[in-house]
Image (cartoon, rainbow, N blue to C red):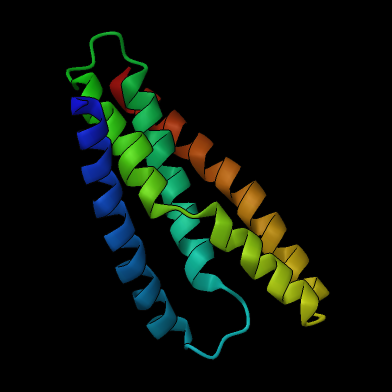
Length: 129
């Protein structure tokens, strides 16, 4: 039960940060932009953060309690990033006939997310080794 509470707290924080971060990106690029920059930026940052955390968690001597690990990865990163919004925005782009933008969004999200996760992971591993 304690782990679930930690995850819930992390998820709450992640969701609030996603909302605030999305608003910040919308202000930066303009609210009228067809391309969903806000979700792309949030998901990319979440991938980088999860990569950093996974590199840290792999250490055998990591001082982080398992509940804190769950709160940060499942809770915070899970609440911060959003696959369902990504899917809905892709469908909206495709329905509007924005095939190039939809394809770019999919590619940037998938390849960028994987690359940023790997960057975070390798960064943590190199700093801690």
